Length: 410
Image 1: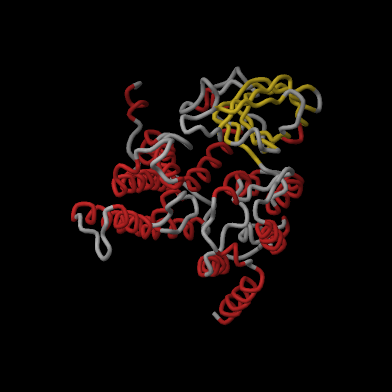
Image 2: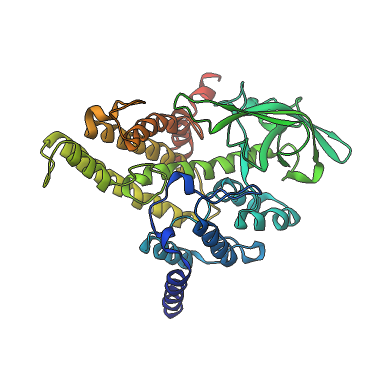
């Protein structure tokens, strides 16, 4: 206990000395740090904060120090998280490398691959994108058709992906490819990494109804990838893919934590307090929200969001005792996404007709942004595996219910 107390004191002192004041304010979209070889910093303090945290390995505090991580044990990592929350510190780095790829590299990659990629993830030197979904393989991901053929010491990759988040801005991609077409579809998939600057790689942003283009179509035309970039065993990529999806679903479930003020992914109004404040501001109340129905809905939402935050924290702590996330990630993803959608529905209900704007006069920038975020939240129950898929996982892997499809074939 004394050692943990000393660690807490030293951590608090280091953060007070090294976390810039502007990094102790709510995150704004244009200042999110994604890293990468073309990284830019709208706020100079963001770059300083990243450098300091990366030098300590605290962008990935629980990862082994051998690969540049913080090397903290579970108790120390919790203390660091609490101390960061105490000063309202922003995340130093937002990265698919941290939330999805890094954990599976630590579990499945060779030592050489870990030494090559993990330190760069910790420091934010590589911005990653995910090559999973294809035009004909979304929910049925195992039907993917992007081919990788071994040609001596390299793989020749041909095919395409879709809904590739920030592919046009990424440096590298972690990609699922078909390396054997003569076996059952789940058994002929491999997991491979390659540079997005490779000859034959091209991207085309997909414009959404909101006007933004965070997703892309990605095309591979005779792309040569070193054979050494294959992660894990040949044709056993589906195992890695499923593991990574568990990490992704845990990450997506954090959208729901914005409801309790514990996540910076909530957009313009990212806490319950702002939900209550918005309702009172737009309805002309100064002391107490007068609408009893809306007041009751907000109260119930607050209870649910706090319960979800505690459940998420417990799940994180339990996962550190074992081998990482498991099927409960589907439970968290499903509930967290529905909670986030509820929050936006309540926000629009609270601000009334001011939530109907899309462009033009009569609406503030914040109101217009909120409408777009409400629309964007609808995709939460699709990305990372639809809600139907999550419910199937929960039924089979958590509740142990029989697979009705398999039973119908008998």
